[in-house]
Image (cartoon, rainbow, N blue to C red; front, top):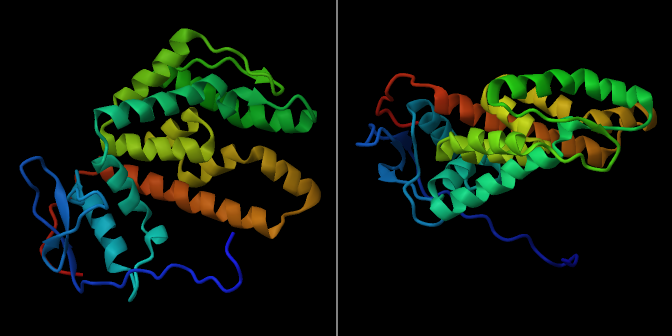
Length: 254
């Protein structure tokens, strides 16, 4: 725990003026350029994106920094770094962790009381479960109460197959969205643009919203919900830009 006299770590100073993205390399990736030099992740990987649209968004984060860098504001950069730093071992671990959400997925766990909450949850989640079943074969069995309902092996296998089909950039963003929302169904819904970020956050916070309607909203909860929306929105923007094939970038600095 820090004391009153402790100081926050000094932020790194902005060390560049112009930001641009490169022409596509042999793999069709666009590198972020800082004063004409390739930016790199903390592990030394070239910071690049598989579409011009995503490269532009990442570059905008760097261009938008002030005299000091605020890494917490560079959500797309962090997602790209997570994708670029994946290897066979880390990719397998991420898939294991995210596929496991299907065992206790939020959308399959209804409140046993009050009934008004359970009805609200089912109204929001039943259609999403149906969609996941039709789209991916993730057929979840809903249960009321805190005791988990074992899900069929084929359901868990379907969740894994859906994740294995993603490239590293899609997987990084879908994994983070799943963790934020507590549901692989909601994470995949964001990935597929079946839900936008706002709708996904609403679906993920039904219980919290229900309690707030009864007891009011405290500042801590409001701040948490604001962060959730910003983070899920970043995932949605990242995924949409990954899908975009957009025009090739110009070489004008920002």
